[in-house]
Length: 401
Image (cartoon, rainbow, N blue to C red; front, side):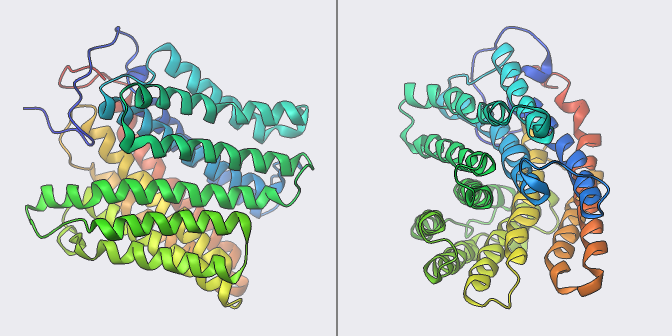
């Protein structure tokens, strides 16, 4: 019997034969996201040491923030949703040529942003902005056609991510100058909402199924409270950025995210890398929200600590863990992480710790940032080495996808 899928066993009809890489959305987008992580973090280290200038359009920090959210993170979300929506609705999202066109749109955005100074500014913005509406259309069509109301929220989140990206570009174009940074922060919060929703659905379920411990359960009221608090974080971040109210919203969200995981059985997962990395990634969500809230209310707490607990930690660990698990399940393989990727889970955790403490390191901050960035990139390099052959080959069980 083939191993169970990550999301649900696929029952879609086989699509026309073609290159395996275009058989499901997770294949090209996980491959591109990992490759982009391997490329961009070393480039960022070069920027930190003054050896590279990404241009004046977004500026160095703006480019790094934008590409980690709207480049890397959005690519992982695309791969997940293009695959999951097909299973949730039993209707295909994008495979073959439509999937290839989506990939080209994402790549065009990366080139346009990196070399924006060589493009007419509005053209660079338009190229980068084109991807999210196309992705939203590909996901919304089957969700709406099947009346899959449980997942309507993902359409709204993709629309909001487009709005955040638009705000970044309006800032870069001088229309809303303050929004270059605020748009990227809004993007982080929206990606965090996706994480809160998805982890609430799958982490306790995976843990219960793998360990057989029936006491591992969701607490629905805490799941709803965590999502509602994250919506409040977004609202206050837009309407009252940096205010005490926004700080309280962040603390509230952190408390609810931490509280809901109390019955998820993390203590039973440490022998299974594909499980513990998801629990560690979820813990970084709570830590990041609490640190961000503290930095708003207590100026002595560096704001970058909470931000990078969310980005390097939560987004980094959970994307690596989910990419590893989805890629195994949806290529027909047993759910056992390759040894190199199990090591990568430890490495990305160390990288996050170094990145978080770097602001407290005084003169050692820059070397710590370089080491953290390099280790983070190496984690995704390990994924590429281990998983590229799987992503480029047909399913081993002969099923479509």
